[in-house]
Amino acid sequence: MRISTRFSDSIHILAFISIYKGKLPLTSENIAGSVKTSPVVVRRLMSALRKAGLLKTVHGSADPQIARPLDQISLYDIFLAVEGPKRHLFTIDEKTAPECIVGGNIQATLADYYHQAEVAAEAKLVQFKLADVIDSILVKQAQKEATKERK
Image (cartoon, rainbow, N blue to C red; front, side):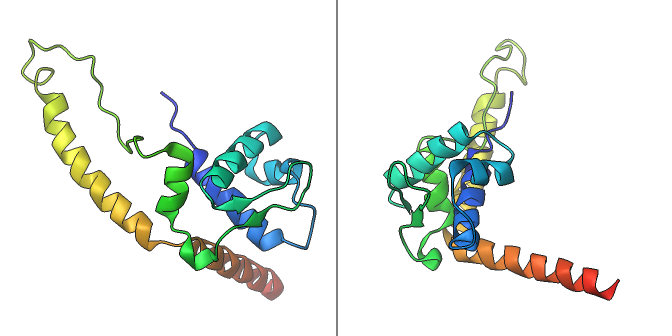
C-alpha cells in the first residue's frame, strides 16, 4: 500500500507560494516542478486548500494567495483540508485470521494504541504553524548558502 503524500505536498505548495510570491509566476507548472509531481495534482491540492479557506485562487490566474496569516494556519488545518477529518494516520489490517490468538485480537489491541498516537499527533500538528515551516526552510537555505561561501 502506498502512503499518501497529499499532506506534505500541500505544505510544500503553501510554502512555495509564500516564499516565491512576487519572484516568479506561481503557475501550477512551476509549483509542480518543485514538488516533482504533475500540475494536475497541484491544482487538485490547491482546490482542496481553497475549499478549506487556506488559499485564494482565481481561475486562469497564476497568482494564488494564502488566505490567512501564516502563523494562523496550523499543520493540522492543512491535514484536514487535504485528507479530511475521517482520515486516520494509521491503518489496521482488517484481513487477519480470527482463529489465531494474534489475528483474532490484533485489530482491537492496535485500535487503542493507534487512537492514543493519533490524538497526540493531532495535538502536535495544531501547535506547528505554516510560519514555523517556512521559517525553518529559510534558515536551512541560509545555512546552505553560508556553507557554500566558506568553500
